[in-house]
Amino acid sequence: MHFPTPLSLLLLGAGALALPASPQAPLSVPHAPKDAQVLVLGGGMAGITAARALHAAGVTDVVVVEAGAELGGRMQSHRFGARGREYTVELGANWVQGTRRGDGPENPVWTLAKKHGLKTQKSKYFDGLTTYNESGQVDFRHHVKASSKNFDRLVASAGMRVPEGLVDASARTGYSLTGSHPHTAEEMAAEYYQFDWEFTTSPEESSWLACAWNNNHTFDTFSEVNLMSLDGRGFKTLVQAEAAAFLKPSQIRLNSVVTRIKYDAHGVEVTLADDTTLTAEYVICTFSLGVLQHGDVEFEPALPSWKVEAIHSMTMGEYTKIFLQFPENFWFPTETALFASRTRGRYPVWQSLDHAHFLPGSGILFGTVTGAFARRIAALPRAQVLQEVLDTLRTMFPGRAIPPPDAFFYKPWGADPRFRGAYATWPPGFVAEHHVNLRADVGAWGVAGADAQGRGQEAGRVWFAGEAGSLRYFGYLHGAYFEGADIGARVAQCVLRRGDCRGLEHVEVVRNVRPYGGV
Ligand SMILES: Cc1cc2nc3c(=O)[nH]c(=O)nc-3n(C[C@H](O)[C@H](O)[C@H](O)COP(=O)(O)OP(=O)(O)OC[C@H]3O[C@@H](n4cnc5c(N)ncnc54)[C@H](O)[C@@H]3O)c2cc1C
Ligand SMILES: *[C@@H]1O[C@H](CO)[C@@H](O)[C@H](O)[C@H]1NC(C)=O
Ligand SMILES: *[C@@H]1O[C@H](CO)[C@@H](O)[C@H](O)[C@H]1NC(C)=O
Image (cartoon, rainbow, N blue to C red; front, side, top):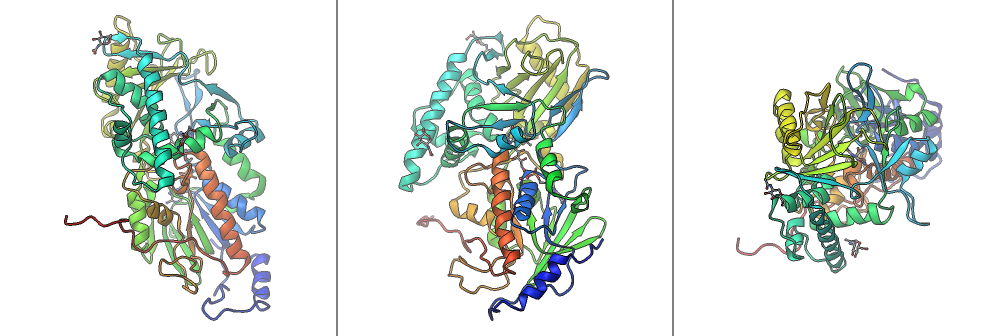
């Protein structure tokens, strides 16, 4: 499909004559009229925020290309329940995580929630938690309290290493060095609740330093408040209402799966699954880390090796909520329960939506599994998962007759080709230079002014934005927001200055600070 040549593009072409042309950087005047100045690939939080930043800078010739049938990405609501008892539940993001502390900075997701009148309710993860082990209800809240203290020590010790430039290690190393050694099922469940439930990965699989600054930037900077969306429009309404305020329907192409991104000195050509091609001066690709790792989209020319290494060095986490609706509430009166299985991570966290604060009378309870255990259930038949879940509930509530549920649903995010996982998590082997390279644009047509590391090079044609690229807030909606806003503003400068703009730095070869000797 071809859009008429926009007026802005014609004016831009004329203006080009007035500007001094640098001999190294060919003018980015398109050879042929483009379908848009910028294609934003993906209509989640990062994509819509990037489009908004472009728009705010005066670049309005933008088209958003989205594979799904609606905007929102990993904000995905679902009508769940038996006939006549359906409720809106969130399969993906559900909480505004951190609001505002005093007159400090405000979480932009909270700003959006207020702007669009989102219905929310505070979640209390630690007040009045009910705890269970394989013998039934057992009060081990003292272990949960201790695990909070252990986490504080982990985060504080990281805070001493970062400014000194000390090497990263796994969060397990950090826990051990600061005196935390969980052994029993209860201690492990308490640690899981504090750590894996947030990061999706275990302490062994996670960076000590990055988990600490990720936690601090969200919960210290913004606040410890977690607001659960209970909005009947779905949490995604934040992205959809925001898009409706500045994008015309013709600027949003839904049900459009990108299969190839071709780029050269003159621009980009994006191919869709139905063989439609769209051309533009720049693209901003906001596909998840999982989608990039899986090679769902072909890049032509292939992405440079420094980019490929960065993509494969971060981890796409798994986080699966398992929803059950029962005829009536037989479970705990608190918001949340923690189950200590002797297998760490086996159906550990349970949240009641049939609670005075949330959806009273709904009969809905949901459990969460993460990481390797979430990948395990993704590979099982649904009937087996249901059986295991009911067995777990019967273990937690011995002697209580637990009927089969009236409704049962879960979405394994890793199996969805639009996402291939839940959200990014930072492993110990992902170093600072990998992060720089994960964010960096590719497809620069000139290297004028670049130093040996490629810093200060001309901007590329293909830019990347999304939660995974956020140094401070990877994994979170606000991470996606900040990345979209930053990259959108940078690309706007490239468009407005006709290519006379800088790309992000990248590192050609990531080396050890000091090579291992004699290995
Ligand atoms: C289960 C779960 C729970 C979460 N809980 C929270 C929470 O409570 N609070 C919080 O802050 N964050 C939470 N998150 C994380 C949050 O959802 C993400 O960080 C955020 O939504 C990512 O936004 P994004 O724009 O970077 O990516 P996405 O939302 O993934 O947007 C990318 C878009 O690209 C599209 N796409 C992919 N491939 C193609 C293709 N080939 N062609 C065209 N389009 C394509 C996708 O359909 C998608 O719409 C959760 C995530 C999950 C999965
Ligand atoms: C559950 O905890 C109680 C109290 O500490 C203990 O007696 C019991 O053995 C535990 N059950 C299992 C299966 O570990
Ligand atoms: C995180 O915050 C704590 C408490 O304010 C602080 O002691 C620590 O140094 C911080 N850690 C990092 C990595 O910033």
